Image (tube, rainbow, N blue to C red; front, side, top):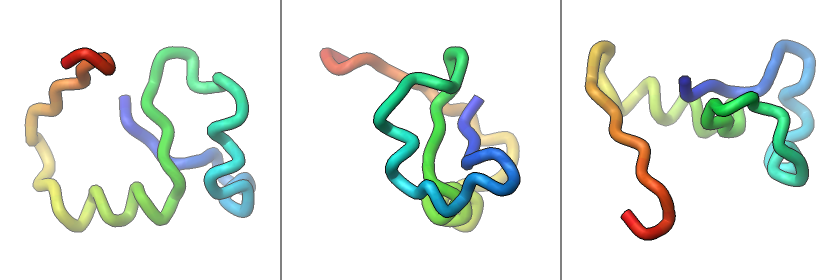
Length: 53
């Protein structure tokens, strides 16, 4: 799943990158999540790849 920060934690912004708390998900800032929602239609397939593609 791709998601923003938990309710009440939005002020952390990019500090959330300092530790792995997502349990396998992709976490982005709430601002980044709003941008994704505005650009990507519901139901769009998303492929997540590692560094080497």
